[in-house]
Length: 114
Image (cartoon, rainbow, N blue to C red; front, side, top):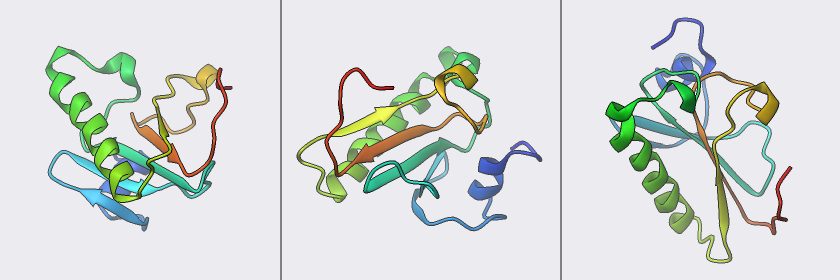
């Protein structure tokens, strides 16, 4: 945990958020500024700023984040589709530097994004 990280503080329940999933390795909560009817942020409890800081030892954790996204999408009946996104760096739109996966659904999306 990083002492000055917003998402670490949410994971530690020092800052309130609407948690929708948690276990020993991962927590997920509803985005405060949703970009779709369903917009959930899925975070590892282990702090690293972005995907670029992940290593081979994080492989299972990263895969688990995607499986949690699929589980949450199923629970929210997103049969028409959903999007999962890792933003890495300011140029990609990352604003909180704790790795997190966006789960977006409940509306149509265009391609290419952005």
